[in-house]
Image (cartoon, rainbow, N blue to C red; front, top):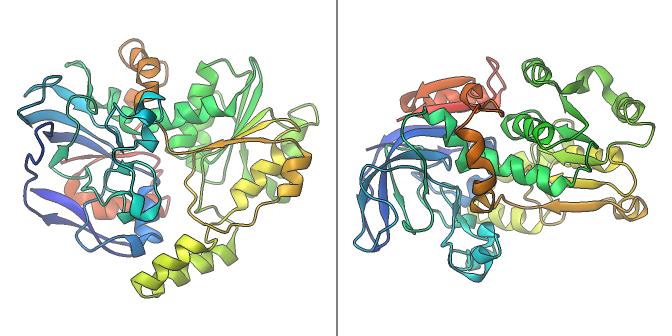
Length: 394
């Protein structure tokens, strides 16, 4: 089959690799019909190379048709249409029963002290082959795949794999009061969808901050009060306070993460790790702070006293400096973590089969064959051609 494989920094290729096969009696093989390119895939493209091997298959946002099932699979059958969550979770352990599928005890990567394994996402998370491929082996066939109805286009459902539950959890964790105010930092796929979900769930004022014109225009078209970081610069905090009775928003969602703009020193540190031997770079990244923290620091400055910050953007540094004095003094609540996909499915799925209030059917900006994935990674990383969400058709 064809699959997108990592070969080095900014070097991904469509390779011909062996088809996946049933290994365990509860495995399922799906023929991938649509698979997404995620912002966190750019971390693999840029800085997480020390935790990858050449040939690792990327991608964690797939859906498709069940092609083959193991002998103990009873909940899906050949021909069923399913979405595959990016968490590799068993659905039956203590953590999964608490709704914490991202901490699944069955698939935790103890070697690296990590939570649940993830599809297509480095040795830190199990080195499980990913879904930017023609076929995918899915374990826990009775509990992991999300069955969706036939008929509507893939665009209605594919975002259940990651974008929708990640954004839903970001909004839930933000604890926006009824008719309250929220600022979303970063209007890429997760930030954009977070603004839509926040409005759908009753936020009184939704604001979005970015510096890419197309992303600002896209969010504004959905009723978001947008602020261009390039225009406001150091005045951004003052501008937001002017919109929130002088005190700041009730909640801030950081949908940017470790690759924030405006952090040149950390950016240089990230780049240096990519020049080191793999083992040394991996140790440095696991023990040192290599994140660009400008977005998180801005969130801390923006949020009102007693407010809540929700982190959905991925951070990876182990010794990042944090302004704890300010956080303590402002009495900030902070929630974070990988999305627990199955925890939110019952809330989200009804919104995908009615009038499409979140606009998922028109959410993608680009739909491309898998053969064009290397160019799509470069385009997305450079924020070219208005790219916000890219879907591949294997």
